[in-house]
Image 1 (cartoon, rainbow, N blue to C red):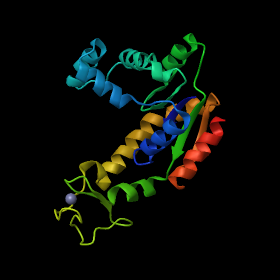
Image 2 (tube, helix red, strand yellow):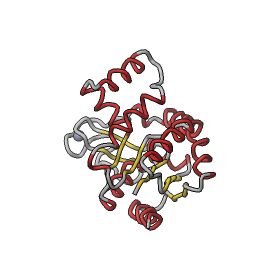
Image 3 (cartoon, helix red, strand yellow):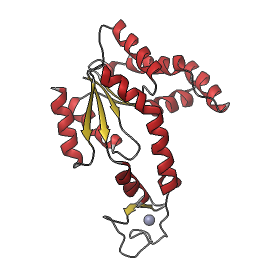
Length: 212
Ligand SMILES: [Zn+2]
């Protein structure tokens, strides 16, 4: 059960990954999370990665693949994984393929979760947060009093990441980075599109059916 999840920010990839991980009993591997863990634990690769990040540079592909390889060598990955946030480029995808080939295995499915940009913008820019941790949405999860948290009475705010102009920029960056990768996996015959506008459980089931 080796799967890669692709999808723009706001497509519900995190929730899908959690559902799929539970159903398939394989770990959800977020490369962002492993990077942070390696840096926090001060592993040699973590120290190396941090030196690039601190210098404002992109972490080189061989460092990234090294970190992924270490993670996949752990016991819980023996039956597979759900990869999220990696690969990001065709070079990384090719390195990943070689790494798996050494273990006589490969990726079974690249699930591309598709949601139209307009809908993502609507979903994300409508979010309202409270410092207590509650979240609201101006269309389907309104507080009783506009702009005020039901639980603690504090004023709600919009996260910088959720501002419309930021969301538009993030979608543009995602598209530029990921489009070549989508085409690469499509050519390889591994990619399948899934409609991320359907209810979450429906999309999860469609992906699971494809894995059979
Ligand atoms: Zn609150």
